[in-house]
Amino acid sequence: MGHSPSAVWSYTPRQIAGFRSFAASRLKREQARELSTGFNAARGKPQDVKQQLKDLQKE
Image (cartoon, rainbow, N blue to C red; front, side, top):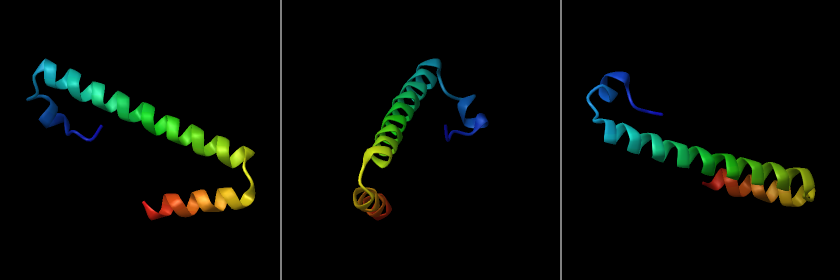
C-alpha cells in the first residue's frame, strides 16, 4: 500500500499493524464511495450523473 519492501523490513510489528489498519480503513472508504457513485449512476437522472462527474473532476 505504498511502502517499499525495504522500508517495511525496518518497521516494528506495531507499525506494520498500524499501517495495515489505516490501509484497510482507506480501502473500505474508497469502496463505499465507488458503490455510492455506481448506485447514483444506475438510478440517477442523466443530468445528475453529469453533475457528479463534474464534481469528481474538480477534486
